[in-house]
Amino acid sequence: MPLSILRYALISTVLLFGFSIRATDGVAYGDFWEHSAVLRSLLTAPNTHSHPLFATFAAHAFLSPYTFAVAGFAKAFHASNIDALLLTGLFNFLLLVFGLLGFCKFASKEESWLGASYALICMLFLWGSNPWGYSGFLHYSQTADVLPYPSTFALGITFVGLWLQQRALTDNKIRLTLVVYFFYCLVLLTHPLTAIFFTCALIGQSWCTPEKQRNRAVLLTILGLVGALCLATQWPYFSIIDLFAGAGSVYHPENRSMYVDVLSRIWPTLVALPLIAWAFRNKRGQAVLLTILMLCGVYVYGGITEKYSFGRVISIIMILLQILIGVGAARLELRATRKIAVLKISIPLILFTTLIHFSLPWLTSTTTRALTVFNSVRLGRPISNQISYKDLLFLKDYISDDSVVLSDLDTSWIVPSIRGKVIGALHPQAFVPDQRQRFDDVNLFFTNTTSDTQRLWLAEKYQAQYLLLNKGTTKNYAELKQLFIIKRLATIVYDSEHYVLLKLPLL
Image: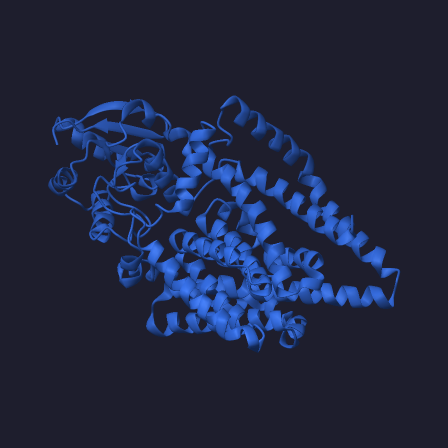
C-alpha cells in the first residue's frame, strides 16, 4: 500500500476514534436538541404535520430527507432518537472523509491521497482564535459536536457529487449526471446553505471545461439545477420556495457574527495562501477558485443586505481554501522528495510520530469507549453517558407525546427530545409566525416582576398541561410552585433534586 494511502487512512482512523468518544460522552448542546426533537417526532408520529417542538400544525425546515434516513436507521436498529443521531455522526465523518478524497481528485488528480491528508489537517486546525461555533465549521474543537448535523452530511454528499460530475463531464456519462442532480436535490432539502456551494461549484466546474465541451456542460448544468429545484418543490414536509422567499429570514439576526472579528478567526489560512498558487495554472484548480469567488460574492451580498445567513458561506470559503492549501502542501512535499530522497521516508515518519504522540494519552480510553458503544448498540442500551439529559428522562413516565409543557427556554430546548411539546424555543423557527411571541411569553412568565395574574393567563393562553420547573435555572421556582399549589391549579407529580413537574388539570 502506498504511503500516501496509508497516511490518509491512519489520520482518518485516529480522528474517527477521537470523535467517537467525544460524540458519546453525553454532552450535547445547541442545534443537536432541535435535530433530536425533529427526529423523535418522525419516530413517534411520522404521518402527522404537527410541529416537532410546538403543539401547532406548522412545517419545520429540519424535516428533510436526511432526517427521514436517520429515522429509518433508528427504527432498523431499535435506537433512540438521541443515540441514532450520535451514531449517524460517525457515519457522516466517514462520508466526509470519502467525499474529501473525491473532491481532491476533482481539484487535482495527481496528488489526491496526499492532498486529502493535508486538506483534512488544514480543515481541522488551520484556524485562528475563537472560530465560529456553528454547524458547517469543521475546526477540531467542535467537529465532534457538528458531525450529526445535516450540514456535515450535505457537505460530504456535495464533495462526492462534484467528483462524480467531473467524471460525468470527462466521460460523457448522463447516468452519472442524473445521480449528481439527485444528490443536489437532497442537499437543497437537507441544508440549503450548502446547496449554495453546490450550485456555485457546478457552475464553476462546467465553465472551466475545455472550450469544445463548455456550451454543452453549461447547458446541462442549467437544466440539472432547474430540474432538481422543481423536484425539491414537491417535498411535502416544508416548502423550499417559501423558505427562500421569506420564511428563512428569521435566521438572519443570529448569523450576524459571520461578519464580526473575521480576520482574527481565519488568519492562519490567509498566511498559508501562497500554497494555492498552483491552482491558478491548473484547470481544475481554476474551477475551485471560481467557486470561491462566487461564494465571496454571496458573502458580501449577505453583509450589504443584512441577510446575515448568507454569511455562513464563509465556512465553505475557508474549507475550499484549506483544501487548496492542502493540495499545495502535497505538491511541495512531492517536489521535495524527488530532490532529496531521504525525505520520502522522513516526512511521513515525522508526521506519523507526531500523530501518535498526540494520540497516545486518549487512544486507550477511546478504544475502550468504542467497544462499549458497539456493545451497547448490540444489546439495545443507550450509547451515551446521558450527562446532558439523564435528569429529564422521568418525563417519559409522566407525560404523553402531545402534552404541552411550560418551562424556561433552556429546559424547553431539551424537553421535546424526551417527550412532549413546549411553548417557546431558543432558536428561530422558520414556519411559525408567532415564534418570537412565544419566546417573549416564556421569558415573561419566568420574570420576577411578572404578576401572578399574567402568569396564569400565559399558562392558559398556550393551554399548558404541565409546568416544569428547573431548580438550577429558575431562581424563583419555589415561588412559582407555591402559586399554582395555593390557587389549587396544579398538583405535584414529580419532585427531585433538579426538577419539579406540576400537572395543570384546571387550565
